[in-house]
Image (spheres, helix red, strand yellow):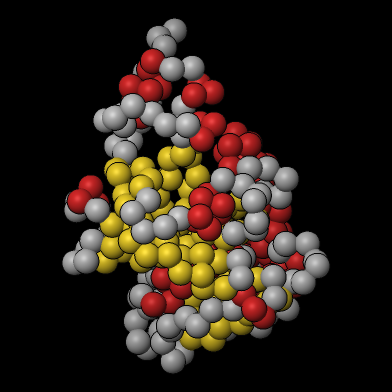
Length: 280
C-alpha cells in the first residue's frame, strides 16, 4: 500500500499587533497588520478563521520562519502549537485583521498571549478558512452559540441584508460580557447569562423553547461540543432543518484543549451524526 503523502504546512504570515482593546472583562480584541497580510484572501464567509502559530514551549524558531521545514527537520513536540480563532473583521483597505480572544486568566495559550500583547508584538498565522455566509434568499436566519461563536455571529449580523429577519442567541457568563452589535432592524438579539451553570445549558433551553417562525431558515449554530450535539438533535430531528441549511459544529469541548479536541473531533462528529440524524 502506497504511503499517503505528507500534508503540506500552509503558508505562515507574519502579523504585527497594531492595537489591543479590552471589550469586556473576558473578551480582548487584537488588531493585526503588516505587509505580510497584503494578499490575505478573505472572501464572503462570515466564519473565516485563522490558525495562530505559537512556538512550542514558548521558545523561538530561526528566521525565516518556515513551518514546513520545521515539520521536516524537528520532532513533533517542537512543532508550532496552533490555536484557531475566528476573524472578527478584515479591512483590506487598511490591511487590518481583527481577532477577538476569550481570556480566562493564565489558563490556555492564546488568551494569555492576547492579554499581554502590545503594539509591535508579532505572531505568525495561517489561513483563512471558512465556509458559511448568511444566504440572502432565506426567509429568516438563526444564529446561536457561546463566546467562542460570538465573533462569527457578530460578523454574520453585520453582513445580513437590511431587510433580513434573524434571531440570534448568544450565551455568555453574565451581563458584563454583552457587547453592542450591529444588526438590521429585523434582527432580534437575545443574550443568555449562564452564571455558574454548565456552558451550553441556557442556550439549549432557549432554542428548545423558541417558537420557530415559518419559512426557510438558514442556521449557524456553534460552540461547546456537548451543547452542539443536543442542539443538532433538536434542529435536525425535531425541527427538520435540512443539513444544507445548517452550519453546525463544536468549536471546542469541555475538558480538552484544542489539540485534544482536534484529535477526537472526527470520531465525535461521526457519533453525533449517528445519534442526531432523523430516522428514515
